[in-house]
Amino acid sequence: MGRQKQGSTSGLTARATAAAALLAVTLTGCSGQAGGPLGAGPDGKGGGTTPAAPSSPGAAGAGRGGDGKLPGMPTVAEARAQLARLTVAPRGSMTGYSRDKFPHWTEQGDSCNTREAVLERDGTGVRRDAECRAVSGTWISAYDGKTLTKASGVDIDHTVPLANAWRSGANRWTQERRKAFANDLTHPQLLSVSAVSNRSKGDQGPDAWQPPSRTAWCSYARAWTSVKSTYGLTATAAEKTALGRMLDTCAS
Image: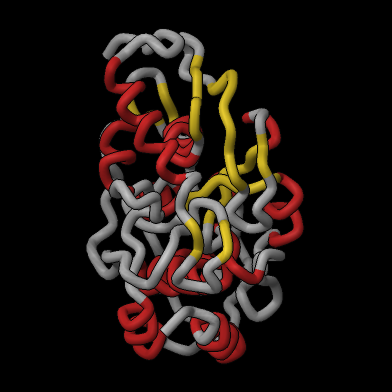
């Protein structure tokens, strides 16, 4: 497919318009305060389906829905049911782990890779060059609510970190399944956050790290639980307890 020129296609305009709606969404499902692309309210649908990556950034945007939630977000009730079904197991070994075993970022069409697709999905007023690199835009960090205006300051975080996935079952996956996990645009596994919050999180689970903004806890727990459920990953007892407490912050 041809490379997209800066702000020149109707598809890009449409996706940018959809992305703009993202910034107007508040985390009413958690505490009613403004937040980033983790979403709002306990009425999102999804989770539990066979992982599949869309073929283009346009498909990724379509999967998010018009209300600004991350794709595949479960309702609070669905997340609680998924959490109850997660298999509890001790933290696995890191033996053999390497980020190279989770290939990313993959091409998504129109010269765009997964990172650029998420930047466009989560941002507003995003303009890209002929190589699909974001050259301007505004992003709200999902974890701490910071406003970011340079793509270089935006990290694309894996909700369930690659290392955490490795020690909870991904070590037994094929390379292709790990690749799908690391580039999943149809479930709440990828989101735009500030570099500082991403570095702070590292590969820690919810029992050791929570988003600095408490208003994000509800959606973070829903997203984490959904991803682990979708991919059949295990959870430690402490992790499961922490997720339950974070879900308790959701509005009833």
